[in-house]
View 1 (spheres, rainbow over the protein chains, first blue to last red):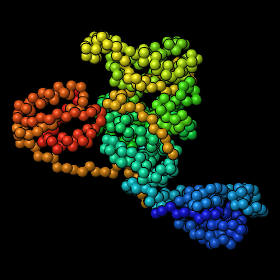
View 2 (cartoon, rainbow over the protein chains, first blue to last red):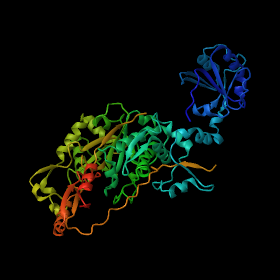
View 3 (cartoon, each protein chain N blue to C red):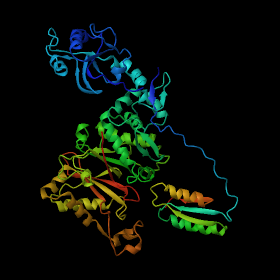
Length: 478
Length: 92
């Protein structure tokens, strides 16, 4: 079914079973004489008297045009709603219609009633009826006493935690979070390389517990994950304990209430946790990537359920991570980093930047193994009490990463096989060379964490660069 | 009406294909050896090549650009058209 257009002019939605609609009936009758007015009646086409109402007892128009309460008054131009007034409010109605002296006997303000199209006992059936042109996914009808939570576990859809049941109504509500068409292909998802529509992303986002306003971030994360540069396929299949780490930048962080502060990598924030989870559910359910099957991680890490956070841009002395990676300042982006679980760097005594940089360097050197070099990138998450040291000394971000690279030029003699009594290492031939721990762009810096604690954190990477995975910054589009 | 959920999976079924018949003998056959670019995979394949040649097989060597990504489609196509069988060296 196609979304039916609204007529131009002023459009009203009413029902007889609403005292406020009854009271404004004479106002509508007057408007019908003076301006171009269309009235849609939800329960009685004979209502209101004195107006030739359009029968919307099917609730089709009300459902398609998101009428939540009656009376609702709309001003429509070429099918587009320009203004909306809900309930009776004289000034608002006068401004919207351009007609003055409306309802002289009425109070200034009277609340309306719920729209029949939004009534709990009708909404789902309407969604299933009118939403059928929008939703293409296979419908799974549960048996009479089947528990939807248990059923999802049994069907293999879960990451191990309970899922919100993806009913058509919830999925339609989720799709309201994006301007993209449900049938648009968002990405080719590994490992099965399946075309994944916005609708499928929305279904998995519902299951993850997302709110509709998170959906654009989930879609962007998926787009970034499925690039050749990020190489989600390899990240999924590797035996190493890594997964996609999502860092969100831009105004969207505040708009959807993400956490960049206290307990930033921990529990407690719905947006952080469900966005990361939704991406992993899409990879599992659409891409077919399941642990024990193609996901062969020896250990994995708890972040493979969800690892997503926002950067504390406001408190940072530096430009955000997204800008370092080439995004326009102020844009909403999600950066994907192939990372393991974070670990803490404690330094409570350094008050000058050189000393603190040295602390970071000795910790960074141990990444995956102190004798393994040039294989892995690192995401260094600097907390506010540490970043203050650099701010006060006037070090910019580049100065810090340059210094870290200098401090991490390692003597080959310490890296070769057998050095330190450890077999792991490089071939003897490099004994007399100096070798950097990281490739030139291999240390990324992000600012986040709570205001108290002289700590930072390192998120170790996975096979960095063209052979494995490169960090990807993806713009978030509405 | 009972509760309805929307299927979150890709709703695809992988097509089943018949395996190619097993080779009766190696002599005169072309065997591809695919190195996935993991360290020391070459050592394993060198030894296999020796063995296969000893059995009278022709051996062609191939290499994936990186072990972290699936083999490019051109490479898969080339192996399929030029070889009677293929052996992949999977790990270090």
